[in-house]
Every structure is written in structure tokens, then in C-alpha cells.
Image (cartoon, rainbow, N blue to C red; front, side, top):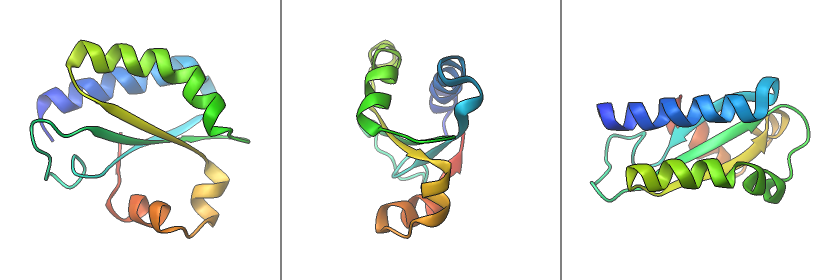
Length: 106
């Protein structure tokens, strides 16, 4: 993981912690960045795990300005998926199984 990526992730995690408080359970980096296979133009894929019920559309609206600001400031695309802690522990979808396998806690 590059120093630039660490810096971006640290800033974003801090902003998400401010936004969600105790609801923020964890942030997981997945995809090419987590596998150390990223190209210079690769995006940053994150799974944001929250306590309690999660409506992905509402969470995108809530966090969108923060994510966009950090994306623009760093000239990188940041993609966030939102999921409840209960769902990530119980669901066996290919997507969540992949995140559990290759994900790196931020």
C-alpha cells in the first residue's frame, strides 16, 4: 500500500467516523488496491460497515459530499458500498465473500 493511498484512506476513515460516530463498525479496502495490483488510474473500492439497518441509497446521499471532496482533492475515484454488520457476517453473496477474502481493514 502506497503512502498516498494510506493518506487518502486515513482522511476518509476519519471523515466517515465524524459522520457516523458509533455506527461506523469498520471500513474495508477491497479490489485491486487491496491486492496490491492497482494501476495509477485504479479506483479505491471501500466497503463501509455500519451498525444497524442500512439503506445504501441513503448512505450514499449522506456520505456523498465527503467522498466526492476527497476524491476530487486527490484526483482519484473512490467507490463506497454500504452494508450492515449483520449482513456482512450472515450473507454469502459472491461480492461479500470476495470482500471477506481479500479485504484489508482501514
